[in-house]
Image 1 (cartoon, rainbow over the protein chains, first blue to last red):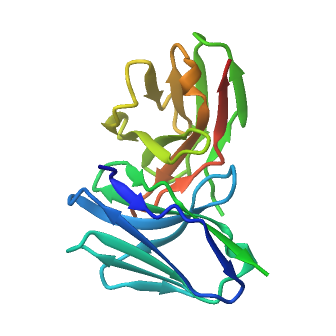
Image 2: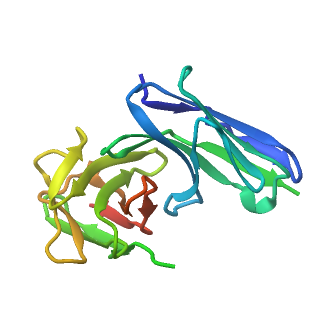
Image 3: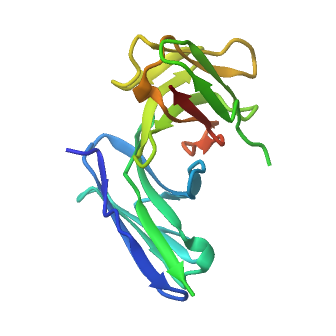
Length: 109
Length: 112
């Protein structure tokens, strides 16, 4: 079983749409969770950390449910510049990060 | 804004040759990592390094791989005898007190 699983998409949405990505992780020892974005052939860039209480950064809202080992990302009012692959990440304390395969988003005019 | 740097940006080598990929982590960071991404696949963890020793390594990080922090600024990944399947993008990352890791731009390794 994959450590971190994501719907690969692609998600094709119009500008201004709201889009949600989901992710599950299998290792219950995972302690830290993140969303990264990756543009084609570039390095992953940190989008936001994810906390159990839920957290928001502008148009982006992330949520963690430890009981069901589920992580989500909501993007409101999508912009063309949001087009990228979104990577769900789980990390055990002191260890390296485990990445999902990514969900590809294309925002169209 | 401080950033992780990596050199070279692209390395082409012949199968069986040794390569060294170099990284300069963010200066006040204490934890260092190598990841790789084969074209079209997910980012995979290789190794984490703290206090001059490996703190965790994945099953990918076999005896062909080694890491070193030769001085106060560089962090290197050595592949002793490259194979065709080592062709990938290799990313270095670092973190300070938080768990948020920051990635370098990567080195594209092509083994022919």
